[in-house]
Image (cartoon, rainbow, N blue to C red; front, side, top):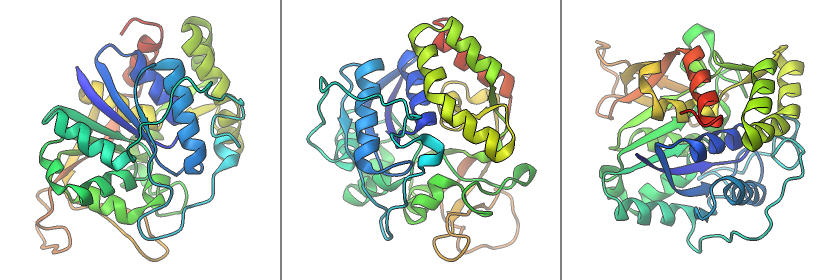
Length: 319
């Protein structure tokens, strides 16, 4: 059983990843922490409450950072995730689930300390909450089981970014926080665009989920309509890239992913801010800005067919 704190900025793909976690029998959601990113903190927190209310009743939600550590919050990307962050579906919480009184970073610290060595932090937005938790209690790095991040891009197949030629959205959202998180003494796996853009839920795949996976499948279909339209208009895709759910799949089935080990840095300034660079283990030349930092596992390849099969099995209740 994976005990998970889901740190998220819902977001259509974030919502699809929460459904994945809520329905998989090997994941126990200990909490959901919101962060700015795809929309404002008010919107992402509202969406987190809605998703928990509908798919994971009783799981606590804690509101997190409204802005990056050292810069202004980015504008919501309404043309991708909708004005409401959930594909312009207008879905709202009923008020049955309130907010945890603690800020997200304190919730993370308290929960990790309550379950030493057992908690996975699954982070699919800007990494501000995790950096704030480290700042408040650096020792939690040695108490976390692992950190799985959806973010970054490492050049496999020429993929380097999606919000700039150099940067992926979550890293660009708070590059300072990402560089802190990747330098901490906890096990980190990074599932970036190198594999998420090689995993596509086609229109037919999504329609099959709608028809076979009950309420969850209908929800995934509904929230992904505008999201798919964005993918079609921007890159001519007949479907959607599988970003955040790929991080869930890595947690459940790491054997589906080929990884490369080595310390990772995130550029924090200039036109390439948010760019992720790994020094692979075994790289011979000295690199003082990387040397001495812990190795991260960076995903560079994926068995996409098996990843998609895992998601579908989970939603139809056959995981």
